[in-house]
Image (cartoon, rainbow, N blue to C red; front, side, top):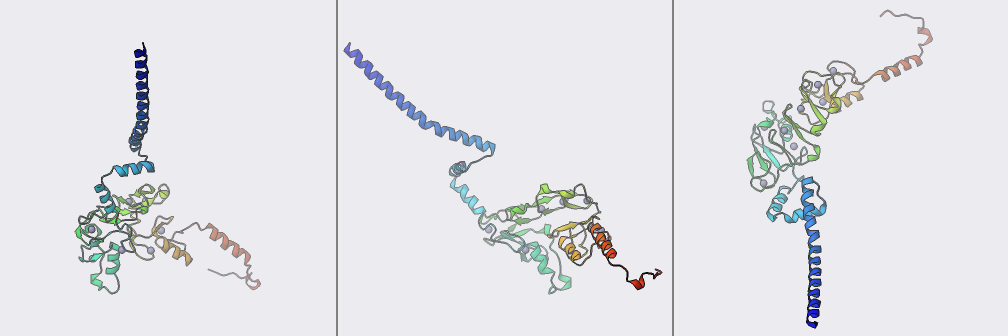
Length: 292
Ligand SMILES: [Zn+2]
Ligand SMILES: [Zn+2]
Ligand SMILES: [Zn+2]
Ligand SMILES: [Zn+2]
Ligand SMILES: [Zn+2]
Ligand SMILES: [Zn+2]
Ligand SMILES: [Zn+2]
Ligand SMILES: [Zn+2]
């Protein structure tokens, strides 16, 4: 009898130890399992907390990290006064190297350049770019084939256009055939005016055939691909914002193309009427009549 009791005691003890051990193992495993599952769910949802990003970072191969780090080297530290980018272009026209097409056009259209040699770059024909980090010349592409750096965070294959400042919200408009800034969702393309206009004008601008495919009436720069802000006048004609302001400063309030008012003039006419009313005709002229 004593033997059976001892056996029971030992069996009970072994069971208890086993139970504690199981509980410990299960409790340890539980959290690891759940974060892993959570991670998977979150990735599908497209939501990643910082901890999870770290977790994903750790999972990545060192090689992948190196490639990504390489892509971003020198971002925003290269370029000209027009664009931040990490390549220069070989002009297909004169075969010279420039930071960008504006740099080319400025250099090739100054008074020092002979009249017959002045020209603009045919921007869509650019074929070669030179990486600013390793100076390797290559066919137009986004990532340097020699050093692996990204030569422009925004890159348009159609325009051969590079820009690291993506906050400008560049987009390519197929109807315009060029890249524009300001975000695709904020603009619509008007087929009659032949250009992208701000959504604010969608239901209220008088269309003028090819309004944007002409020169600014003040400074005669071609408006369509101008990098300056453009104003659409109430008559539908277009000109640079700063040229319009310049005109207003000189008290010119009518469109230089069609002579319609460039703004609501009723306040101005009201003021003029008031001034006439407050300036009585001098006594000696009051009875005089003049034939016009
Ligand atoms: Zn050229
Ligand atoms: Zn430039
Ligand atoms: Zn390179
Ligand atoms: Zn483009
Ligand atoms: Zn457009
Ligand atoms: Zn229009
Ligand atoms: Zn102008
Ligand atoms: Zn007009």
